[in-house]
Image (cartoon, rainbow, N blue to C red; front, side, top):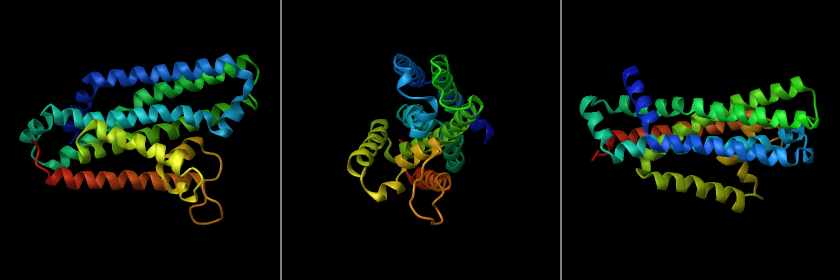
Length: 252
């Protein structure tokens, strides 16, 4: 299993599209930092954390991690690499789960670097303008934990992308489905209470770590618990569905 995992990680690292994804993360961080530096006095760093602006910026690298997970599976299938791999290792379960594990692990360095640059830039800009809005130690602590949650979310997103890539086979379908669902949540379900049970809303709440996802005092009223269970459940569901399809589908 470890041999398969390392082989998948090596394939992931040499794909040209991954370099474009890494470049996209850096461009995003540069734009976010530049926009904040242009008028840092418009909002304190504490307010940006509380209002979710930091989590909004962090979700772009998470989405790119999802795209990377999709490309890890669909790119290899299109080139015939999956068929060749199954000829060497016919146990499809081991091959499938090694792909998902590789997707979740491979995106962590890039997302960690992007978030570290983003958080450092935001802190430096607001500190230089003297508009932190709170104790520095508390803000650093909040930024660090937000980054940890963003990393966990990126790993789940990459696994979901890999599983969905197995299900739909085409990278543009998998990416298009994610974009379409985001638009549905933001434009169609924005005023609906059921939106609290959908992935984009809970991804934002998970990275933010503040606010209330659900009203009331029910079992899932704690925002982080609710978001974690929902996102992990979605990841597990897609992973299992992808496993069933991968075991039964003919690989051409």
